Length: 302
Length: 73
Image (cartoon, rainbow over all chains, first blue to last red; front, side, top):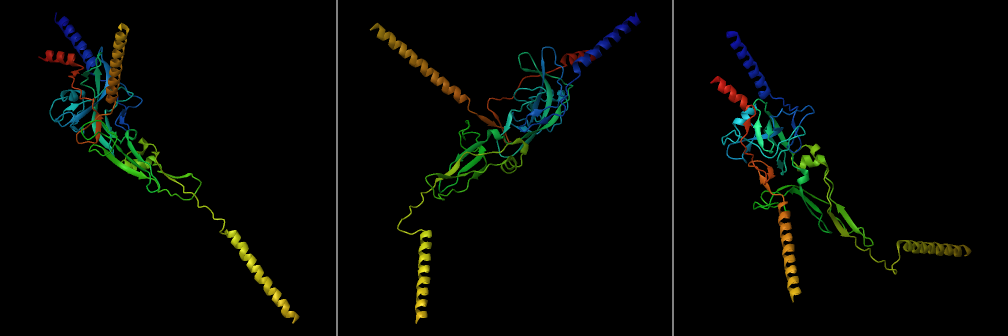
């Protein structure tokens, strides 16, 4: 009887540990996850997701640490959470060190950050990267508490494809100009309004063409000066405050300074040309020599 | 006279429909304008429609944890 009870206890223990390994282990592999130019996370080729619970779908998710004053009070991840259990116990806690997350999760093809840097300097933010499961309805449902959490630095370079370019053509007196900046609103909490003079807007740099001249004179054509193209290296170093040059392409402009070439003055036919003046001079010179020569002959006969 | 009334009704309804479509088109195009919210104390901006996810997540191994707690008790 005792042996039989021991056998049952042993069987239960084996089942228990099998159950534990099936539920608590984590198979996720971040494989060198790193930030892209715009705060998105890119995984290595050997990235793998955790095995999801039945009916769920496994993902990766970015968790932002806050100062506990609300969702917009994002700070660098400084609490040092290392497991899914840490994330779970500090999720939306309403205290300093709480974690929150925005948007949708990603898989091994990458996780897209919902934040964008629409200013003139690069910005970094440390965040937690953790596994998460979504249920069949597409809602966040579970965190594997045994999965490791990785702290990763998101790099947000100013986004070139969101730049607002205000270009002004030039004329005979003014060069063409281009202002590079970010239009982030209308100054009253509304959407972008197409200018760069609101408090939330950023002006990064301005460029201009050479002053165009009406000369040389011509037959009605227009003299033109373009704003020089800004190379990706110059853009990163001098416009975007030392951002990563590999995140940019050369920036060109369309506005030109244009000035119609003035008509060349009409030639007065009564005024001899330089060639005619030369002929006249030569004629006079020849006449002088001729007269002098004739006079010398007359003296010889005397 | 009857035809005139019918035609008037049809024209009136058509004008209402066209007006409705124009108003709807304007409001939908306004929704496409980028509206941003700035993250406090950072130069980061996000779409105004993005919100903090406040779902109550469960521990994946909750069943196991509960079982373990029950056994220890």
